[in-house]
Length: 332
Ligand SMILES: NC(=O)c1ccc[n+]([C@@H]2O[C@H](COP(=O)([O-])OP(=O)(O)OC[C@H]3O[C@@H](n4cnc5c(N)ncnc54)[C@H](O)[C@@H]3O)[C@@H](O)[C@H]2O)c1
Image 1 (cartoon, rainbow, N blue to C red):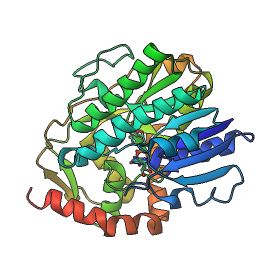
Image 2 (cartoon, rainbow, N blue to C red):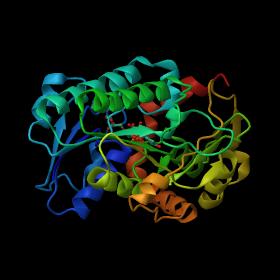
Image 3 (cartoon, protein in one colour):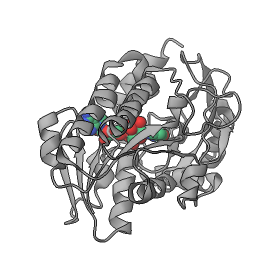
C-alpha cells in the first residue's frame, strides 16, 4: 500500500509510521508535515534512511501541494493538527486553520484524485464531558473548548463528505494517548520530565478530572486495523479502558520516578476543563482489536523511555516550551 501520512512528525503520527513500516513490508509512506513546534524529525531518525519512507515539508492547508503529494496514493491518514487544549485557549486561529480548513483541503484532494481511503484522526474530546457512561459513535458531539470544537468541525466535515460526495472516509476518535516521543507539554511527559528535574507538577483544580489512557502503540494497531478493515463512512472509538483521576496519575508518576508528593503544585483550573471523557470501544473491538499493554506496565515503560532519552526532550523544554509555561503559570 502507498500511504500518505500527514502530521507524521508529531507524537502519534511518528509512532504510526514506525509501526506500519515494521508490520507491512510492502507498504511505503510519504510523511507530509509542516514541522510546527510539535513536529520533530528526530522522532523518525531510525526510519529516515528506509527506501520505503520519504519526508515532504508542507502544510495541509496548501491545496496545490497537497494534490501533488497525494497523487497516486492508496490511502491517506491524517494526523496533522494543532493538538494542545491549553494553547487553543490563547491562540485558537491556528486550530481552526489546520483542524478544520486543513481537513477540508485534504477531503477536496481525496475527492478529486479518487483516493480509495482517508482515515481522519479525531478525538474522544469531541463528545465533551460525560458524568457517567461511555460515548457511542452515534452520540451527539458537545465540544467545550476551541481545540475540541475545531476537531469536531473537521470530524463532521469528513463525515459530510462521505454523505454528500461518497468520499471514502473513516473517522477514529481515540482517548488520551501516552508513550515515547510525546511532546513534553502534555500532562504525562510534562509531569515525568518535571519530576526527573525535581520541578513542581502543576495540577489543575482539584485533580479529580478523569481521562481514559491509551498507550500509543495500542492506538497504532487500532488505526492500522481501521485503515485496512474499517468501513467507509464509519466512526470508530478507540479507548484504552483505563480511566483514572489526574491526581492518581500524578502520584503514579511520582512513585515511578522516585520523587516526593510535595512536588505536586495545585494550580487554578483552566476554563472549560472537561471533567471526564469516556468512550465505548465495542465497534473497533468487533473489528478485531484489543489493547495489549496494561496501563501500569505501559506507564512504567514510558517513564523509563523519558529517563533514557533526555537528549530528546531537554532541548524541547529549554526553549519555546519553557517560555510558554512561564507565561501560563507565573500568575497562578
Ligand atoms: N495525543 C492525544 O492524546 C490524542 C488523542 C486523540 C486524538 N489525537 C489526535 O491525533 C492527532 C495527532 O496527535 P499528536 O498528539 O500526535 O499531535 P502532535 O501535536 O504531537 O503532532 C501534530 C503534528 O501535526 C503537524 N502539523 C500541524 N499543523 C500542520 C499543518 N498545517 N500541515 C501539516 N502538518 C501539520 C505538526 O508539525 C506535528 O508533527 C491529532 O489530530 C490529535 O487531534 C491526539
